[in-house]
Image (cartoon, rainbow, N blue to C red):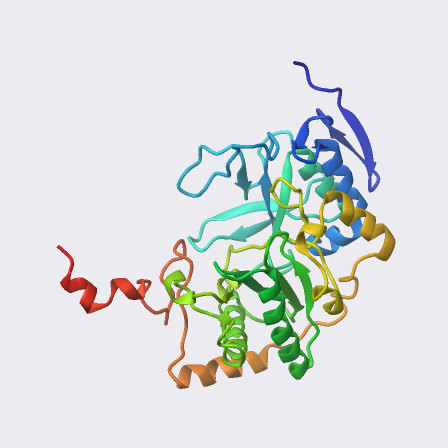
Length: 355
């Protein structure tokens, strides 16, 4: 069956052509490709604030988020959807801006680097559902200006538990005199962003986040954990410090998520965080909310904090025997990193029972 006729949209002084605009992208909700593009235009100021001049990985679902569709992984490239780190080699308008980033392997890529809302609309026309920006700007791609605290519920915990831990994060930020900006993840988790001065490397910022997370863990050991190995986390909220490792990204503020409900990762105030449910924030409700109240993250770029206190905490922890922690498996072995071996696998008792 032939697709619907293309439509053209005027965005930021340019024309963006949307092919097959009536194609269903979220069958459970009946949302089309054009609905997705129009959503991103409706929350334009907010998502551009999250993406502006940031190298951005695109999570593309060109066939829509349909039942049975799966996302390709590093080891399996046969999925219906995929991550696109390198800008396409064909069909790219001359005005598209990019930035060169370096992966942990040392290889490089030119990623989309939005300078205006046209870039977002163009990516959505390609089937981009989720936007994954790096925590850096094009002006210095090796020095993060955004500290990301990712609160990830583990089995036996839920969004309410993540909110409780977020309250501890908020209290600690207040003690530092820092401003944090919370948002829903679009799932069960909570993300908290803190703007920092772009003066430190990925390694230093990651160490600072580890030190911050350990301090929260000390205050709520019953509910917060920094344990990398799942077998050690228990029914607690994992504070995923590795989201600050190079080439690790989080769905940005106002990004849709690839699930049947078409939820969106949505900025909220600290007061709201204790009252909301993540499933309340979807493609249709978020644009209505944005039109009504604007962006709770509107002031996020007003202050950039100095992470020196966190680096001092990291040195203190190191002296106490709490040094670095494991990196993601796709990273090369890093200086000072402990062995990447599950605790159960390095237990001599287990070795004795191995054939």
